[in-house]
Amino acid sequence: MRIHHQLHGLFITASALGTLTLAAALGSSPAMSADKEVTFAYQDMVVPFRVLMQSGAIEKETGYKITWRKFGGGGDVIRAMASGNVAMGEAGSSPIAAAASQGLPVELFWILDDIADAEQLIVRDGLGVTDVKGLKGHTVATPFVSTSHYQLMYALQKAGLTSQDVKVLNMRPPEIAAAWERGDIDATFIWDPVLAKVKTNGKVIDSAAKIAEEGRPTFDGLVVEKAWADANRPFMVAFVKLLAGEDAEYASQKASWTPDSDPVKAVAKWTGAAPAEVPAGMAAYRFPTLTQQASATWLGGGAATALKNTADFLKEQGKVQDLAPDYAKYVTDAYVKAAAQ
Image (cartoon, rainbow, N blue to C red; front, side, top):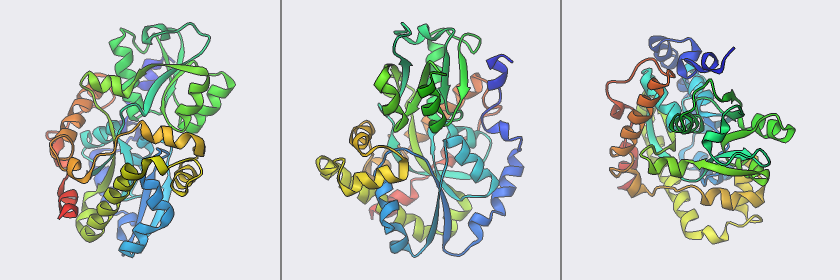
């Protein structure tokens, strides 16, 4: 089967669930029904939030029981939310855009990170490939329905390559690390901790930061099922305050986040990254402050624009069938504004 057919419709439509089915699943979700309990879907990005997860500060502050479930990519997180298994989670701007396009009743309420240089396209040393055009005839892996997937498809399109020219494989980060080690793939668009591993015998030929400069910024965000958030507003505000505080702590104490420090050990524990790789991995991201979160750059307008632009591209690529009338309805600054008071 040619890769075009493998990729077609693979975003949220691959779940074979219609918008009404998804909404109904969320509406009756067991993840939302329990009092003062929530299941949170997280990934392996190296971010200050992991310190809060390790310390139990959110549970202590709110009195909620939180079940932390790790997922391999944003597409998996969105599917879990659609099935009703989780009420909150982390996802990149690409899967969030796909979820909004299908009308999933979720809201982006926090910019976990501005991806910047934290996701890059790496090609294996020794292949003689020096740019994206050189990937013709090669095998590239990335987690489908992720920001890396979106960026990879844009990079290939920009280079004049189609899905007939490059074999694009859907792999979760741990699978990419194993495939790279075996020599099964020639390139990957990925984030840390796998990014650090593949860069040891590969070189960067494109990055999220470069693509952002071309008008296609990407980010990771926290999303929540809207009805659950409405019913648990005090939790949401307290959660956001803690997130902002931990990001501020990292910004002011960055030099002390060394491989042998407790914060870095916490990040390594929850992500699977080597402690020695965490400081550089975190430095590749940008973490918006509470004030910046509410600004026009992010939750005050910019994030909705980024979601729309991403969705437009995904539709052009045949990865989503429809576009939402208004992507702003899937973004809220209510909790960051309340937290700032």
